[in-house]
Amino acid sequence: MKQQSSFWALWGWPIVIGVLTTTGLLTALVSDTWGDWWSWVALGIPVAVMGWYSWPRATAAASTADASGASSSALR
Amino acid sequence: MLSPTALRRWSWTHKWSSLVCTVFMLLLCLTGLPLIFHHEIGHLLGTEVEAPAMPANTPRASLDKVLTTAHALHPERVVQFASHAEDDDNIWFVTLTPTPAPTDDFRSVAVDARTAEVLAQPRFDEGFMYVMFKLHVDLFAGLPGKLFLGFMGLLLLVAIVTGVVLYAPFMRKLAFGDVRRDRSARVKWLDLHNLLGIVTLVWAFVVGGTGMINTWADLLIKYWQHDQLSALLKPYEGQPIVPAAERGPLQQALEAAQAQAPGTKLSFIAFPGTAFSSPHHNTFFMRGNEPLTSKLLKPVLVDARTAQVTAAPALPWYLTALLVSQPLHFGDYGGMPMKILWALLDIATIVVLGSGLYLWLRKGVQTASPAPQPAGSATNGFAGGTLPAPGAARSTEGAA
Image (cartoon, rainbow over all chains, first blue to last red; front, side, top):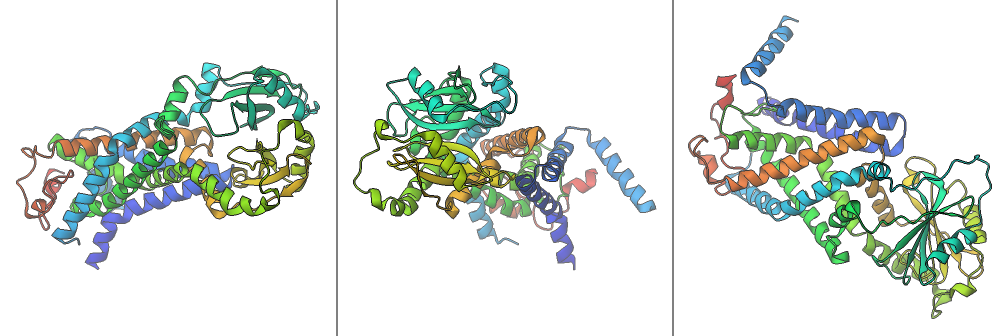
């Protein structure tokens, strides 16, 4: 069980992003309407993820945001 | 988990496959950036040819007349190809070369498809975009240059796969996206390298892989001629290229090709003796009207003398793969938003390449890193540097 959860902790997001990118690359090939729109979402999210995590910011601000996110989800 | 020996081997492979291809990949990423927007840049520079607006039902000029017009400007050359503009079939682009053989010495004439008048004589073989294009495609070295870049592409794929394997030991103690900014510059760049590398993984693999396939285009076309066309051309064996004077009417040939492949549009025509045709045929490459089939081509071989269809062979799987790999490499199949995302992913790849190089150059500088760990010693000399020791407390947990 522990083995499994550490696998998903490590590979969960990379797999989600990889699958997302793959669908985005493929849908635009087969449709010029919904396929294109989906490709913008599916390729846009990885780009946004890179921007979000690599943007320079104060560590304190980031950890505050993390903490508030954690506490709000704990409240729910 | 990887054993220390396995880890060392993966690290070694990652280091050397990346180091060998990095300089070329940086060149390809930088030259590819303007190429994503070649259409838009052409519009801005005014080098894009525009056809004057005319009523939609304006009758079209005969193809023979179009070619006569173009040839009159370069009577000493032969017509190798004729095609429609990418998004406007009111323009014919006619390519003229000294002989039917493949060459970089070509002239282009844009002719109005309705009036058969010359619109422009665009030079696609000079200027900034041409230099970018040649550096990107073959380093000005023809087929050997292409194949060399294809091999560099293969090394990139190896570097990507080994990089994914190495992602695990480096990230085991970190949450996705963690960038340890409070540590040395080297640690920060290691984390950024891992983050951008894993997020761009699929895109970089697809663009790298399709780029590699594209470098084989010339060879695949040659193989196709040998594999499929040679059987079709048996009846013509021993005959020379059909002389221009003995060729039948082209307009009739075009109509025959269109009748053979209903529901398609012309992509381009390859004339006798050129790389995409046979010595005895005008080959009409037709494309479909659906988003996917518009990327695929259906060749129709029309006898150059009689203007009768000889054959319309189905495209073999390897040419289908080549044609599908082209949009996946160019990023030109999802409008402007896709081009912008393509450019951003390209820039992210530049950062991955640059940070990888930086990590290797700074491999001796460990002063700001934690003391060498047992696991780190297994990767001595690896560009990625020290690994978090197995079982060691997650170093950033205290800070967060």
